[in-house]
Image (cartoon, rainbow, N blue to C red; front, side):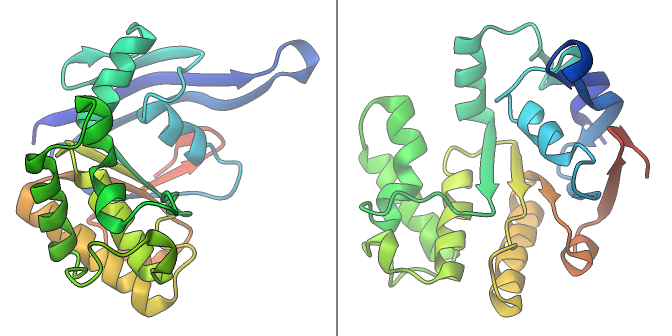
Length: 225
């Protein structure tokens, strides 16, 4: 399988001197195109820091990170912003929807930011994604009026809006009941299977992890399994 991204010898230290805390300690990882992988490890293991770096929201202290053949450690902030918008989607434990926006407006927001306006093409894709998420009757609902499971499905659709190669999901089912969690995971698996989107899903839930084809265990700032 072709590698989508590779990190090697990744270190991340917060603070300096006696207050310095080394969170990543030479971590190396490769994700292939089309993988659906779970990221496991106890609190403080470095999972969230790794996801933040993979999402180009923070740079490592040292080490290399390449994705789609681009050096994302050396890249300038503006280039990282453009790369992130085009190639990386995010799903968070707290859906982070804009409460005054409709479901559709939330979904097309990443494209509207990139294009500087809403377009008919974006609205059509956003609507199609919401239909695929089983939300055809909630397209124009204010997001504040949606249930927790519906909000998270809107968040998944938003992450997919710009057809990213990689979606990073940080505890995406952590605030959902079991039925809603399984519905979200089934949708993620369907997108992974049908469109080849790569997913890296951070979770503490062994049931959620078991639905992924690969489990990556992080401990003390290193991949341990």
